[in-house]
Length: 160
Image 1 (spheres, one colour):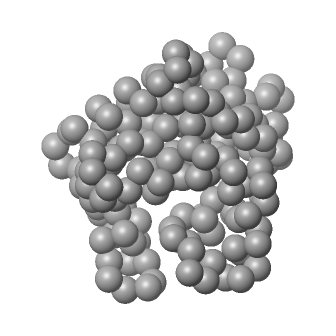
Image 2 (tube, helix red, strand yellow):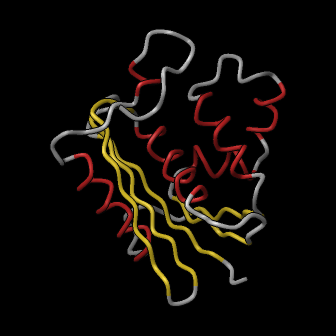
């Protein structure tokens, strides 16, 4: 099976505020784009959710995947092993535990390598994802990030 390349980006207008994400999956000659917009969220949530949705879009387990992201938040958390320490402490006092738990489930299904890319630096994959993310949060009828908008500690479901 061919190696998969995933480019991701997240964007928010205000932090918190409307936000969007863009994902570009490439497998040989095949390309697939994903984008979603949310009415109230943060940039970090969109960056992480973009990676999650890219990995969740893969149909087969144990795929070799390279994820390109301009998010130090996501790339460093994984590549420096921080997220695994957070997991051992049940994400106590960490932001976005709902997404980090979801990330770890899908991350462990594959062989994933992260590459940090500088945002807005003429990387075509990253630039396309940024366009998708911005377009997504400018659409009417944005989705609801129920976990983020909830005042409770337990998620009520992700999409609204």
